[in-house]
Each structure stands twice: as C-alpha cells, then as structure tokens.
Length: 267
Image (cartoon, rainbow, N blue to C red; front, side, top):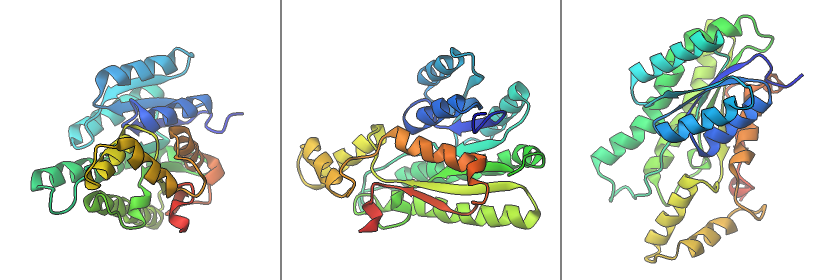
C-alpha cells in the first residue's frame, strides 16, 4: 500500500519547481492530483506527464488571488475525483527588493500571492476537506509553503519575510481553529532553505545586485556557504517533506512547522 492511496490533492503553483515535483511524488504515492497554476502550457504538460502513467491528474488555471479561480478549481477537483483530502498552498513569489526600493503596487502583488492566496485557498477548501476528513483515520491535511524567511529575518527581502512570517502564524492559528470547531483537518507548514529553482535563481540575482555586481555565480556560492550541509536544496527535498506532512505518517502533527533548510537556521 502506498502512503497516499485513495487521497485527492490540489496543489497551487504546481506547473513547475517544488509544486510539480510534489505532484509527481504524490502520484507515485497513490494520490490523484489537481495542478493549479497560471502557467497554462507548463501546467498542462505537467498534468499530461502524470496522467500518462495512468494516474489521475488534471490541470486547472488558478490565479490564487482570485476567489472565483479557487472555487472553480476546488469544484472541478471534487467533481473529477470525488472529494479533496489534501490542499498544498504552494504558489508564491519573491520580490527581491528592500523596503525603501519596493513600491506599494509591488507590495500588493507580493501580498496577493503569498498571503491572500493562502487565505483564499484555505477558506474555500475547508468544506471539501472537512467532508473527507470525517471518514479518514487521521483527517484531511493542509500544507502551507512558508520559508526560513518566515522564521528569521531576511537581509534581501524584508517584505517577503513579512509574508512568510504571516503564513507561519496563519498555519498555527488555522490548525487551532479547525481543532476548536471539531474539523478533522491537520494544518502544517514547511520551511525551505535556499532551493535550486527559478525562485532560488531570483535570490541569487538579488544578492548580486545588492553587492553591486552582476556575478550571480558568486552570489550563489555565498548562499551555498550559509548551508552547513554543504549543498543547496532541491525541489525533491521539499516535496518529500510535503508528502510526509500530507500523509497519515504525520497524523499527530498539526500547527507545526517542518524546517528543511540544510542547517541554515541552526546557526
């Protein structure tokens, strides 16, 4: 028996990177997966690749800042697969600007994806998650993508850190609210270090810019030096943690934060 047999998951921002790898590992673990993103071509390709293995997978356009997109994505997932057991609020963005450089429009865009998207996904998925959780030994699960920047300060992007700190405490608060209401829904967050993805590349570019140079590789090496384990993270490193939190293996965890950062925050 696979650890997610019979489970249905909806993952935002899953066309590529951590989200796509999470979808792949969840399908391998026996789940049926709905991929939500605004990158239509990549999203369809990711879903098609998973469906090609005779697994249940679909792509649905999902702008996480739009309530109607969330409602449609959840409705399609439930209609196609019969319910919803797992929500992964993975979609996020990195600004790479200091507080004096960022303007209000950039802040609204950042907060829209990183905060509003998590709020809407959680709020609108709760009824479907609650319904499935009533019949599951360990309930349903929400996994929110936070960051080490939601645990410690960020020299590069204090606004990003502000949003991820919000996700961290929102996770704990929703876990407590679900428990108070008797909903059998576990809510946890995961906190990656620097990961070799498109967003990771953006952090290297920001580091280079702050250093007054275009040497992105030197910035990458500086980031690498902050990880005692001796390497940067991969999407698979984080996806494995998400699958764990979504599975019954984490059945006694709620309101917790799983740090997967190569030792960065241990210093």
